[in-house]
Length: 60
Image 1 (cartoon, rainbow, N blue to C red):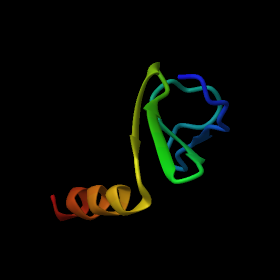
Image 2 (image 1 turned 180 degrees about the vertical axis):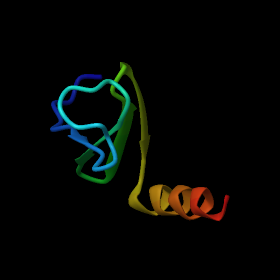
Image 3 (image 1 turned 60 degrees about the vertical axis):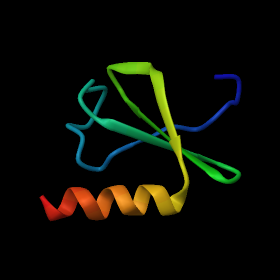
């Protein structure tokens, strides 16, 4: 990963530096997601893709 991005923690995290949360970053045309305890593993998607994932997860 060569781009510099500003990661934001999920509002559902435990707060502080707890390692159990999802982090999100946005760059031109892409959204990046990672789990805070595995920061080297990054998934990229679009806003449309993330919205579809959230809709699917809410159905369960």
